[in-house]
Length: 271
Ligand SMILES: [Mg+2]
Image (tube, rainbow, N blue to C red; front, side):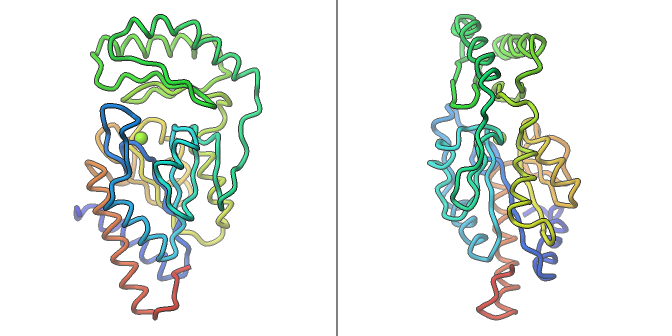
């Protein structure tokens, strides 16, 4: 683990030692899971899964937030007790119960109509493809030429210019479009915090993309520690270069919490 992130790890351990519950939040693709050529190939690495299990066993509340649909994300994370936010914060899974889902039919209709309008144009762009999700859509362009990326972003800008009723997030691997522009990963973070209990928390968020910016800002404003993964990550307190490096950071945190727990005795759960 890089020495640069040691103070952040120490701050979380100090929070736990002071009796504060740790709420550790992560983006999935490119943060916990390495970037792969096709989104359906993304997996939670076994080593990272084991570390997350250790952190949960130490009493940390974990949450994973993604642009993927909730059902897709559940299939990939599949860890008991982990809270989830799918569709960029539109679908929540807290304490094993699905939370609210978007009810704004007009926005869904706007988005679907636009997708129909641009489907043919996207088909003509080599390396780009449209994914329709339950509460949004993504135009993927991972691995495509700069010309394709530029064309996809131009299409998305056209949509955003046409309506303020949808949210367009321009990311390095594609463009995400969701209804309910006021709902995002940042609002999901706020709901997770409210569900744990606002009073006494140690907060952490790791993300790698523009669509993590609101979540990072929310955690930072509440005094939490924000780590960016890779070069495209929004402004953050610290940066690691890859999901593997983030795994090392989390392993270091899990070890430190384990030592703290052993010092306190076997019944302590760090809550
Ligand atoms: Mg990501």
